[in-house]
Length: 623
Image (tube, rainbow, N blue to C red; front, side, top):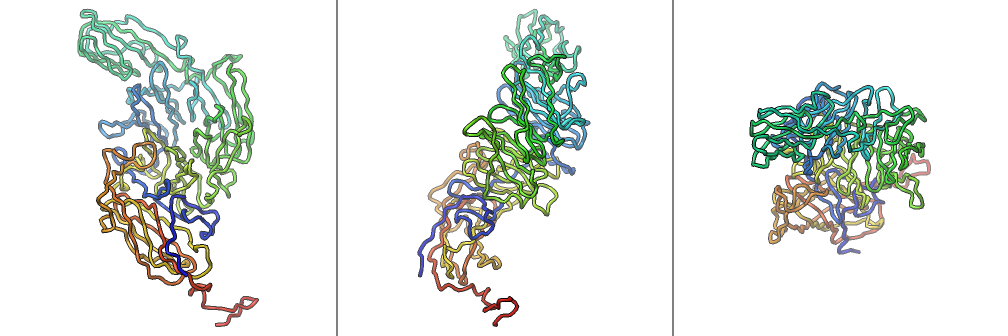
């Protein structure tokens, strides 16, 4: 008996539950590395591109984040070794901002925008550092033991939330709510600037934690008014130009005539987002301290839930903090036990809920979401990706982020001491894929994904380009153990593959029968005669995510292939196929067909027929 064609569409990700690969769907892989599942197909993942100059010292990236200028331009920040740096896109170099920090300390980066400007706050073991994104090379050290603390933080609804203090791992602290008015802003008018072409505004001399905004300088003799554009540029009404550093107060002009300056300044340590103080009887909008001591386990991460409450994920439990509209009534409850995090970066807020790697049961880690109960307002945990066995990996340094419709998180195999795998969970398709990259931090901006390295102080833009920083991308894709629904022995005469491929790429096809060794049966070449060069498709270098896939500056041209490979193999009960991209470039597979499948009698495969008629005891056989 023969079946002429058995067609498989692909794109169901990796399925490891059940563990028997004979039982997983035809469209899924039992194992894969470097391939991404999309709608109806798999494609080789994009590569990895170093951001800035290569760092050779050993270590790892200890913090990464993005701030945004007033016009929306992103600014990339990181913490490596003893430094906080920003990436200068003009020079393609990382530039030191803060130095002399504790080398091992990990930092959070919280962007914040108010009427006073656009900022990012870097916080950690050494202090609080306020950086204006228009002048990223300057900073204000905001730590004041009478006003604030040192720890990890986020900024929510104009208030900084801080946890993980060196001397308090179970307390949650909140700052003043930034009023963004004359309560915290001071107005200066008619400040003399002198006749020089540069100078420093007086506000800074009276307080190192102050920053300015809304600057205008008027030249007395000509009446020319230089106006601040909130990007650090002063534009004159008569054509002159200048600059202003909002952190230091330093200004420059193209004219040297005497004039006056008008501006406002703020000090966030005075009723702002870095002021955690409160009255003896706390008033609305002031700072607070909330105890979350039950169990004694440390607060690992604090995130915003879909109901706008604050969820503190600890090692073995979770607290939920709700503050009412008056900012006077606090509900602080342990709402779940027996869930938690091994590592503080292994959770992320999404539009659907808080997703995290639940490691409270170390023997059975689970990708979990805290989401609103559909019948009420309570948060309920639900397991994600139940088709994948996460216990095969170790999550003690798991970092997590989002990218388009994916939740991205890192882990490691048992034979590695550092994260060496990157996992992509598709929240729409519920699929899991694995990439060959290790990540200590994960961030995204403008449709691009960035990871901090696990061995060096380097940051990489991943899923970018078609090579792994110059090398071929490590990859393989292994199908299910295919039986075609029958215990009969079979033979397959031909295999057919369809997808897109670029000229310099190749796709190796390997087969294993009944668990035997792999044997290569063919290769699909990007310049083969089965490639349709009459229709060319533009393939963007950025791949999946929110960035445009086609039409980018760095693109390649791909073509449809429909290749048939003749197979001369033994009779088998089951077989699996392995695909390996062997070159540089793009390749996808959207159809894998078994053509002319022939069925024979129901017998054991030849390699299992060496001994028969096993005795009841199992000790005797009939040769």
